Length: 196
Image (tube, rainbow, N blue to C red; front, top):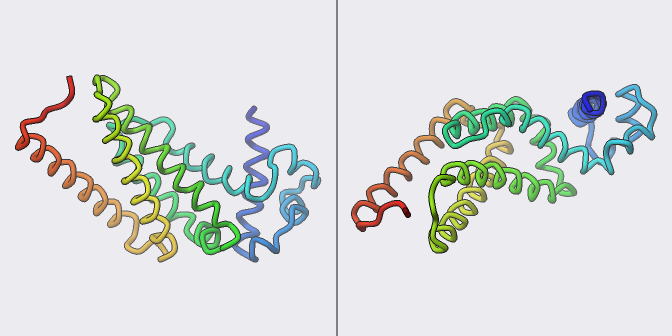
């Protein structure tokens, strides 16, 4: 299994290096495998096409940094890992996002952010009995924050990660905490507590 991952990582690194030098649609599978020092057919042992490789790079590299901390208590650290990953790889992801032929990668990006947020939300509510109404509200909120965060991150990458990850992280944490406190006040004022 590790040998498979090692080969995938070598192919991925080869593609990333080539992406920084030329346009994605001008990079052939032969180019990637020549740089990786593997025969061309080896690519198809691991990936269907370049799009499959691009989505694998994102999910593999990001989840490597967050999989061991994936619970609600660590949401700020998870957000930090996401921001620093995108900032560190800004030149690569900026080219990927600007490639109009890869518009479907944006959908995958949104899906991945939504998957992370859903996992964190599920962890937060795991001990609670939830009414159908509450479940629907949580689903709506998850969608709202997923699309909002992914769209914001998409534009942040296109704007060369300005403000930098440290300042952007502080702003996003403040925004989420401010919204959470607002929800607590609303709940108290309306006389509604957590579902029992």
